[in-house]
Length: 111
Image (tube, rainbow, N blue to C red; front, top):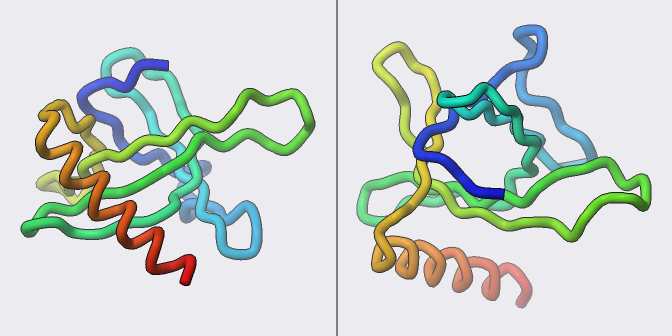
């Protein structure tokens, strides 16, 4: 799966973003270019140098037929009317920095 420049969050029937397990938040992202929807569970969110980022993994119901999960780091932004946007991180240095911050947070969570 390739990730595009911008996604927006989509609410289902104008309901808040649903929780699918005890503390797992499910985000439904819509590609603004082609309208495809992607279901992702939010793993973590954090700021680096004043920019907001989110770590997500693909979500599919556990029915035994799904592929291995995919992991994605995206930049989070809010539009002028309060809409949420997730953008691909295309700069390799920025992506490496964001990954390292996420990985350090993940390791601290394990201990």
